[in-house]
Amino acid sequence: MPARDEAERLPQLVASLAAQRDGAGRPLAPGAFEVVVLLNNCRDGSREALERAGRAHPGLRLHAVEVELAPPEAHVGRARQFVLDAACARFAALGRGGLILTTDADTRVPPDWVASAQAEVDAGADLVGGRVTLDPAERAALPPAVRRMFLLDIGYRRALEEVCALYAPCAWDPFPRHHQHFGACLAVTAAAYRRAGGLPPVPASEDVALVRAVEAVGGRVRHSYRFRAATSARVVGRASGGLADALGWWTGQAEAGAGVRVESAAAAERRLACLGRFVREHPSRPAPPELTHPPEPPPDEDADAIERVLRDLRVAAARLRALSLDNRLALPAPPPRTLTLAA
Image (cartoon, rainbow, N blue to C red; front, side):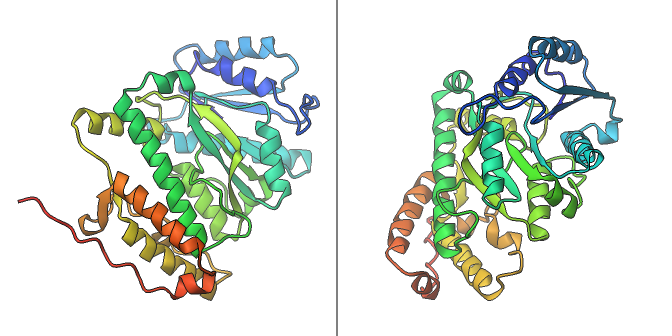
């Protein structure tokens, strides 16, 4: 994991990693996994906090790497690339394959975090995106309107995944699944990481870029509910484009009394029907991102209030469940919603 000025939160994360258990609830054997923390550009005593946490959990193989990234490279993409590359090199030095898990310093993982990721890989996944929830206490402290937007987004994304699975079912990523493949809870085999060329050198959304790189070389990506982690609900984060930015944006929307507009249900269904036809016609080719990902932000003519989209997607899923896949793909495209523009 990368860490920048996280002296306050690192001890909790280390404690959660030291408590890892196998599928039967037994402590993992010493040496079953190692923890590498990249301390980049820290100014707050993160190194000392990590050393104290290591002494508190002497059975944990904990490695600290301290670096000072120059301004052009001082971003989460380079930091995570550095530490994932180091993990991959560690496996190469040991002459073996393995599984690389990554999380964030403001996150805590459950006791089955390592075991649940390994179980998904044993079932055939090359990369596992985990379910990221908010720290319960910090979530409760958010304004009610922000909590509502957060829950609406979760419901919308899940409904979108269900409609996607009905049009373009995936054998290794069946529904129920979620939409998240973010750095707070991500696992990738060392072999898949090498095949994909490593983490792409991008300053933000490096986790999403890695997923797309793995998919581009034929890797199997699983979005698992049993692989999970709880992260901070802070609205000022260390990395741009992350959850903190989303929470900050929702806060601004709530304070302004504005709603959230997303891709309309009709536009989403047209897109996902096209995805299903593409997958059927080209089963060995990665689908283009414009079919797999909703446009953000959507064009005005294809946008609608998230509350209405959530309701319409649930109605669409109920209608599609009653049909065979052949009949779903043969349906005419849903008409666009008629928009009423304010004067």
